[in-house]
Length: 82
Image (cartoon, rainbow, N blue to C red):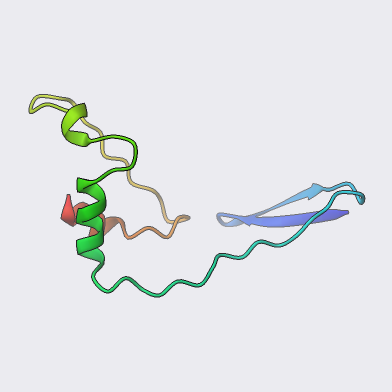
């Protein structure tokens, strides 16, 4: 079966064997966060799997990565909290 997916501004086409089990996955609906800035600050203060205070020192080199337009992340809001 020939199928396709949107990828950025392009469409990628590929072949899937007819015997393959396929399904369409949809994200679960979620209510908007009541105060995103508070949630972002909490997530930054309580990272999963690591404590930033244990990983960096005042003179550590750090790198802040921001995604691009193809990923709907509120980068401006996250950076303002940082």
